[in-house]
Length: 274
DNA sequence: ATGACTCGTACGACGAGA
Image (cartoon, rainbow, N blue to C red; front, side):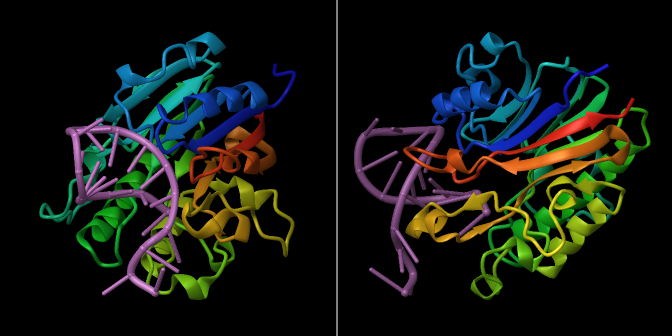
């Protein structure tokens, strides 16, 4: 029995060591039960001392030097950790492409009966660059891994920085992004195929028809945040059997002031299925 | 404006991010 809904949050922090004070304040203000972080940019041994343990979280993290890196912190237990989707490399994978499946971009654990994953999708760099094709292959592997999890008894929740804006409503100005990554038909097809496994885009699910779900990322440059020049590229994807999505919110305060991440945290409240 | 920030690496720029 849960007296109150679960709070599940995801945040690309752009450097956990650089963001330690902000993460601490955000944890204290929001009290999430499950925290998914991306771009920690550190090895697990470099996680700021006590940041999670002093707040009663168990942590599972992977990292390799100063790039990428993902983490799960849970107050609901943390077991059966998965650290790679490389076993789900798609058929036809071009071995000449960058090996993004070996980078620390997904970690998953069973937290209180829910299989959660912290996901950091590749950027893609330039349309049709090697990294762009590798991004699409990485999405194929993510879809295959997710399909395998959906066949298991624990419901699946994916959260993270997916580096795809699913529709033109998810960017401030489609005309400004012609020729850019994150909005191409191929990336959006990869996104749709993932969603099509039977996952609910939580932010959309609680957004009234005709309104726009809030952005989660704004470029550091040119005052983009204050101009509203953002995108919705961080997502929480919920298998319906996990429970009912009660709310979804973006922590815009976390994008303000000194030394913010370029991403804001996304958090949902979930009433777990009985 | 082929720009604009920021992090990590390593102590001066530079790759990468989106």
